[in-house]
Image (tube, rainbow, N blue to C red):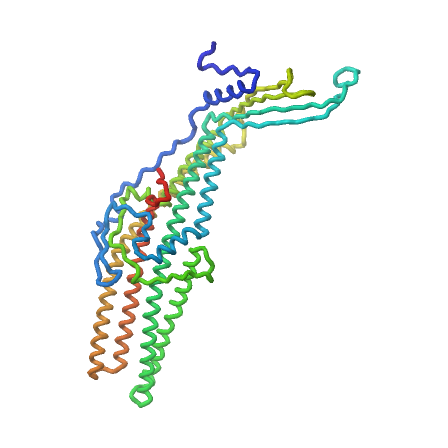
Length: 500
């Protein structure tokens, strides 16, 4: 009778018992995994995103896109946050981009690759089972057997099943699987980052489209005003009521106004091309949707995630954490490679010149092999040190990613407050220019000012309109930046199972 700590009786004449020996030995010899056990870093112990307290809301302006926005601490982010802009055209184009964008498809394929690599690595935990069969026609030399008798030619048939198992005594295989699992997690959050980046870029391109169209309209109106003013000066010059210098100065003003239009048209064309590329199409396959700032609704409530939650929500932070986890596991792999490796093997089969698996034809073996690295020229030692250094690198990159995440949120919150102030100022400038234009129109009708003075007031008004359009568009863009900085609400999408 053996004690429960005695090794199993492996001198067993049969494959079934041999496999049982291997399984039992594996269960008894597998120990704890060497190397550090990964623990998720604690979130930063900060209470806010800036020194100054966040106001309850931004200032409001009496214009579309100038509404006050409330900041709500701890408010969750909807999975489809872009629908808050209430634009059916925007929603439709995003849906198409999510289906056809090649960069997103590449990220999805990369995740599948990582998952398959993880499953492949898990196979190392199990024994390797193989079957072999051979048939050989032979004639053996009688001299080699020490006899003068003639040995007939015969056919030797062999069939066997072999089992080999590398015992994971030090947990190196388990650490390798842990690393592969973390790498798959990294690819998962890289996919979420690609998803968020694509949606944000599509929304920004749509807003840029709307802004540029409004600026082009206002610029064209300025050009029309400058053209009319030049024509009036030429008429006055013809009758001696205006100097040639005034005509030349107005011609220069018209040229300057006209020079502002081609860059805007170029930017619009490039924005349309970029939007088309997001849809996975070629430039000649431009979508039919166009956008107008008046058709986009500014969200009146803005979420401000708690700082302790930000590290859970940002895909780039979660991806960086996964790389840190993988680096930690690789330290265990490198450590295990320096320790003895034990391999068990067994085989059972039949070898005969007649009928396989007949009486007396059985062959079997059981074996064990121990390999201990003795001298590798320092290779294993330095690989372990390299793994430790890689962990330190990943830890530093993780901290840098968190700092960048908090900076992004702080910048977006500060920008939204400043944007509201800027819109307020531009609206005031536009209203003042409008009042000035109205007064100039009255004075012109009363003969108090010249037609050229009236056109100058109209030009000032149109320029104020452009400034207002740009300020409102910037505000919309920074709303997108805030949602992106907070992680985009991926955890609330129906197609995503929350990562724990």
